[in-house]
Amino acid sequence: MKTPLIGLLLAALSGCAAMTGGTPGVSIVVDLDPASSDRTVIVENITADRNGLLYMADRVSGNILRVDPASPKPVVVGRIEAREIQGRKVNADASGLEFDAQGDLFVAVGPFSEVVRFRAADLNPSRPGAAQTFATGTPGANGIAFDRQGNLFVSGGASGTIFRIPPQGGAAQPVVQIERSVRVLPDGKTQQPIVANGLAFDANGVLHVADTSRGAVWTVRIGADGKGDKPVLLAQNPLLEGADGLAFDRRGNLWVAANELNAIVSVSRSGAVHVIARNGSHGPLEFPASLVFVGDTAYVVNFDVPRRDNMDANGTTARDGVGASVARISR
Image 1: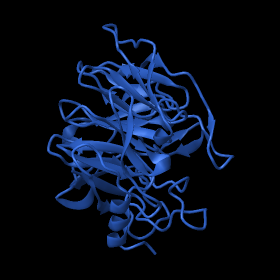
Image 2: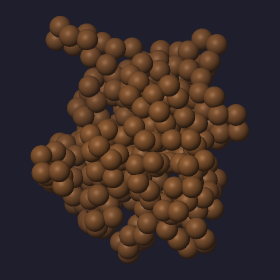
Image 3: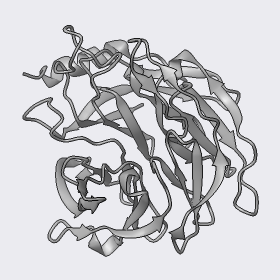
Image 4: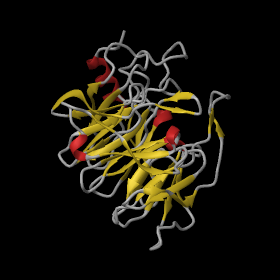
């Protein structure tokens, strides 16, 4: 059975660290898997449309879920169908999601080595639309982010490659390379090879890259030809263990989902790292994988992997928390 929501909130608030402007409040917006903590719903990324509605992809069903924070009941608005690849059924296991300026939704699909697109009109709860291929040649596709010219950048996970896709789509081109690295996690057996994970552009057009393996964030300046300069290490810190999704707030602060620590942290322009919110396995942060801002409010999606800080007393599962869910951090 799950811990009651009140207990979750008290545990989270007691573990929150202060940040400039006051201590943030952390709460659960919606439990996406209320029947169990068996990961019958798995969500890894989150984004928002221009109206502040939240979107995420369920890796189990392939459904695109939409949540209105004011009335948080998830509804299905699209679907990514499984495919047969080399004679076997392969689920999309969708990762990064991002809207373009026209309101179309783009989704990174690593197992297909593609980015797929939903037209705005097809994100319809009455008749959920199907995804269409937008770009190919993106093995390990994970995080995605648009630059100011409408080019889409896609991280390649363990390969360290970051791809660039022009506004019209088509074949992706490799434009940045993060040096590969594999780290053995504190359990002594789990290996973490993902060096190019979450992506975000700052107000000056500088690309920021989450390096999950190293517990680090890189910056990359993108030239007029669309290719990146040599990556520069912005921060590497124990508080960035499991660095995953990235997002900038309206003040220009970079927020990072540190999944291994059940934490959201900030990284300053000088590379200083500070805890915004952190808790144990009771939540409401449970292996947080991605976040998005709507105004000054951050919405965080919980991937709920039973590992490191997201581990209950028996050391094998994470059944004492809310599971797959969306949390809110407000100040």
